[in-house]
Amino acid sequence: MDIQLKRGLLDVCVLAAIKNEDSYGYKIIKDMKPYIELSESTLYTILKRLEIANMLTVRTAEHDGRLRKYYRITDAGLRRIEEFKSEWKEVVSIYRFVVKEDSHE
Image (cartoon, rainbow, N blue to C red; front, side, top):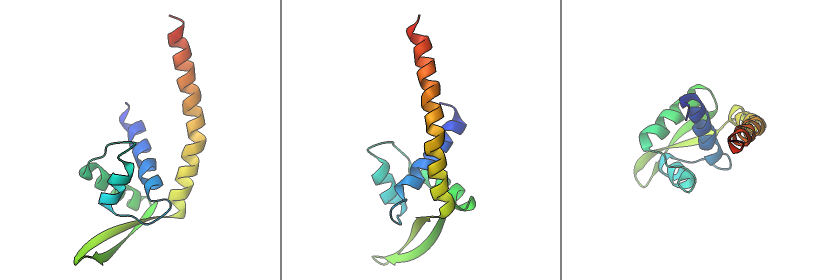
């Protein structure tokens, strides 16, 4: 898969994982696991990129005597999810075209 396409898809997946509630790294990975495998190093790279893009905010809180980073989606992050939904219709259309072309061989 094209690296830029995959990066965009993963970004939206992470945003979707925190859309309804603040979350932290391990829980994000766990919530995404039924759909996609994601390593910790990949996740934290994505989270940092989304933070820089102002699509999420980060706060630190103590949990069981340890500091944990919690991530919250911003309005910009919510807009990105909506943009993705609109863009996805075009991707599906392109996929159907490609599959149709393959079935004529």
